[in-house]
Length: 230
Image (cartoon, rainbow, N blue to C red; front, side, top):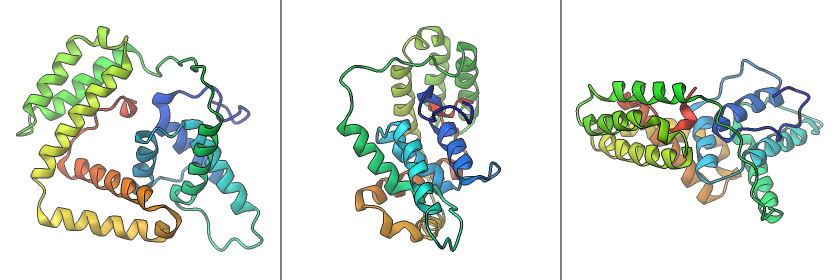
């Protein structure tokens, strides 16, 4: 996608994270800006809630237009959370005018070989970890039938999501009190500036996504979703 393209044309749903990250960096005008764990959790919240990628990009643009129109700008926009309300407004607007006609599906931004490598890699990372052997075996089976799975990526994503949920349940049972405390403390620190700018359901979803991402990081677990296939 070039800078001259309309940002919501030619998008690929499996590039959800990358598209949002790059669009926010362009809107902010700093290509080297790194998103925080809270930002990544927010993107995952939007994806999981079915917020269209176009709505997220439009919301980012709207939020920055409003910020730039201010006479006084006391500080830079340092978090994607600043755009949260604008994104939800765009999502609601798009839902109100959604067409009944299905949109053409774009080809996945990865090949069968990429998919096979991803499944083999995450299976290899899980196999040595106590308690995750069964999940690793399931991933090896998916790798063996990857050519068939490639024909229905939506179904494969559902399978991988189910396996991630199982992984999370196992990891959560092994969390220490200190890990729980530190994760909650970091969440409160990062989320504090935005608590008055989001609804209670939005905050609840964001908190759960943040803590789950932290859970996977603390346990050293790979993400299985096709959205993490680079």
